[in-house]
Image (cartoon, rainbow, N blue to C red; front, side, top):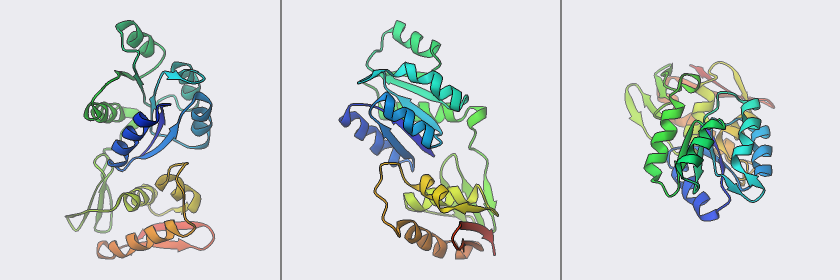
Length: 221
């Protein structure tokens, strides 16, 4: 899952980023409306967490542009402007939820899960290939019925591959699924993650097949 976090306060942004990363979520952080718009145009996001008081304007002004690109994408406003009038304004402007600062990270995660459970964003289907089972909603993996723990990058790579099982996934698509746009990516980092993941999937009768010069394919052996 990939989230666009629009927040200009560095401390708050890092707190939220750390919480989201612990849930195996890729975070693209934007500190202004301009950067947020560029990020929304260059990457596909599953949801947006949007501050209001930004250096170049009110975060609510971004909502119509986000809706043009992805009408059903959940948008949660996170703002110190927490009066009833402000909350009503935010919802009327198109936000799916409005959370006043300060707030509990646990409550934010619960609200994020709630908006992602709506029909247009359902991720609850169980995906199976060979003896491998992946549940996107909970980011859980089982091989022959036994749960296995995967590091975050490997889990994100697996999600990108299994949701496209039987199709070649380009390297660029995988890198976008595994890394945020401001992450430093070593030239062989993705290959290292896939190599470790490949070894773990042998018992599941599933293999990651490299298509030279194009990308990778997940298939049943």
